[in-house]
Amino acid sequence: MVRGDGKYLYDSENRAYLDFFGGILTVSVGHCNEKVNKRIHEQVDTLQHVSTLYPTIPMVELAEKLAALTPGRLQKSFFTNSGTEADETAVLLAQVYTGRREVIAFRHAYHGRSQLAMSLTAHAPWRSGPTAIPGIKHAHNAYCYRCPFGMTYPNCDLRCAKDVEELIQTTTSGQIAAVIAEPIQGVGGFITPPPGYFQELHRITKEYGGLFISDEVQTGWGRTGKYMFGIQHWGVEPDVMTSAKGMANGTPIGWTITTPEVAEAFTGLTISTFGGNPVSMSAAMGTLEVIEEESLIDNAEKVGTQLMGGLEELKQTYSMVGDVRGKGLMIGVEFVHENKRPAPDLTLAFMEATKKRGLLLGKGGLYGNVIRVVPGLNITSADAAEALKIMQESLTEISAGVSLA
Image (cartoon, rainbow, N blue to C red):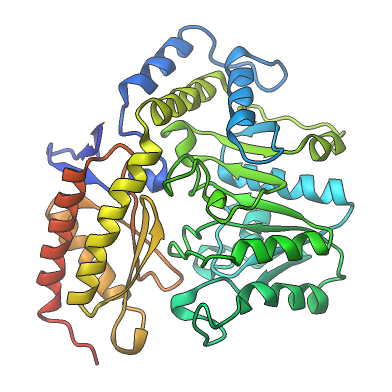
């Protein structure tokens, strides 16, 4: 790829691709967005770097903006360079504040590439080594399509959430520092919990004295439609929230926000050389301005509903499409063979077929069999229709020679 312009990427032969992956959910408002780039250009010519040793106007402006946007009592921000660092900061905050060490994460989760983040991650293909950090326990997730308990919502009575309590009682000291969860699991394949799940999980977290950390690296900034942050769909107020990726439209950034009392418990020295970089802060402010001024959260809800409806129709026609799930413009399509057997072969064939027709999509899931549909928040209904047409053509192409045995 050599150039990006709005919804399109261009390769070295100047071929255009409709980008429905956005650099892994990072290009929120289109490639080289003029309003965001104007902010970046102005900042580069004014002040480029001082580290977190000194506050700057862009850092303070962004922190104030985020305190106003976030749910509940989240007020105090710390800026870093990536989602990995943001999650590291969140776990450390919880351990310092509670005086405890044990953390509950979830199977199929992804939290980054440091040693701690890989230990939190419950997705073997994304672990380069063993789970070296002690005190991390992995609960079952709310994977309704492949329920680990063989049950069906709502008759399951949220067994997956309630099982977290037994996990705490039997595999920890009973004194946890935190529960960390993605509102919709990203790398895990856009696994989307049912109604009531996070309310029950939050109740259990509080009962055992832990902080609830919402990892919004992929679900934040209007991506899921209706709300600015994914966790708001479940009406839960986290004690700590993290994000990165889409908050600065491609400029490196990481962010951890928490309540005043949790922030004030951290009294030791800490620094992030590039955290709070004025250019990244300005890019984030520009991105938020575009999201708000152009009503992109509403657009994500509207166009996401269109995409979800079109994909559901394809599911009825093509048996290889086992499940369609997600919220807003964060949609997963799980490919299967007979009896829900994961079909990574069909997934790859589908991606190649769509790429050939000028549509770029992502891939995820433990088995590598989930297509991730995540276009920029400012795509139009016409863009969605074009993508659906390409996907239908691609399914037709690969379905003829598929054996479901």
